[in-house]
Length: 462
Image 1 (cartoon, one colour):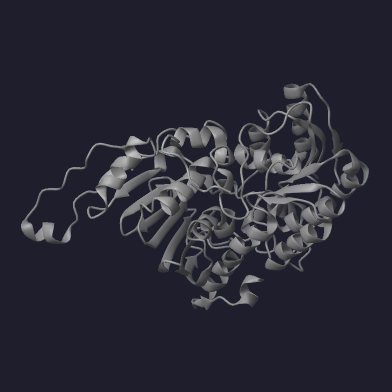
Image 2: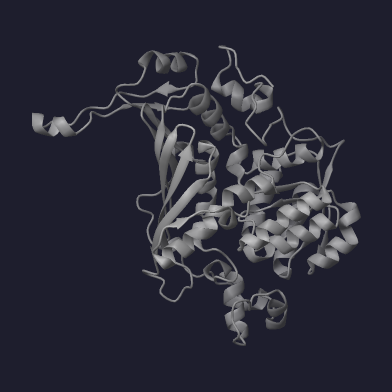
């Protein structure tokens, strides 16, 4: 496939048409299709496994995509099923079948569904995905793939064994802003030069990290929660109140999730691996239960990954904090010898900086072609010659014109639907997701042991 673009292709064209419409290949395994996914004459029949908050995020990203027929939903919480039923009926004037059991839904509805969207707690991702694939249904599963490496591996095995599609919810892989930045700015025009350092963060305010509570009257009974595995990881017979706390706050428990580093950090560490086209060789980490002392997982984690890339070695620092917003923002920063790219799903946190020694003519050409937008020049701080000798002048700052005019999950869902129709390849199938996620499973052990973990094939399940 042609990997070049003509000088008349602007960034807006790229975002409007998509990668395939622009004649670009995003690198294995991703190829995007131009235009919206599907029509009412070619509907993809879908079901939902899990109808909580993340399901709502996915559903809100789906409502403007044509060519979807909603068939069924499964959740152990009747209230959530009722809200899902009402949302679909209110928006599309159609009814879905509701099930309290995933097994029953797949047994009765698999022949009526092309795909399911899995948005259950992490420890259920692998079992639910494998069940659906073996029932002959394509799967879109939220990240992380599982709370264990073995669970993630089982999803890849099931995908290979059944021949069904399995898209993992690293939605930035389908985001035109990220694709354009990687393919055009980093790979083709090399505006960063040699990328040596990477930084990423996701900081969450204390007010957003408190225990989740709900009306007891709408929550499942203790026997239902035990059967659903919310007593995993303890030999103690938990009370109904304790089980309900685990049900609502499963992210706090080691047997149910990987904690903040997987819940929040997985998205961004995936971008490190994708943009570098490499997997880390080692990780060191530190973390603590500095505020939420009764939680099993650390409430703050900082880690450093080492990489060997075609350009040379590189280091990536990542922090996830649940006790402060630290000024706000979640983003990734790629720092090179010629420039730095800060990128995020939020346009306000996307900025590009040119180093003083970089090729100015190349950057000016990118501005003239609409790839970059130059902002007002920075003003150097006053001070003595001694200060100037060790403080660099503010670099020229640029922005990416335009932005994504749809919910950030929508392009990833569109890619999944197009792949089902045979019009695209998945941008993040289970195999590629496992390759990217595997190092993340070792961050918590590295933080617990205070030791550097050097990765082997055994660590990474290759």
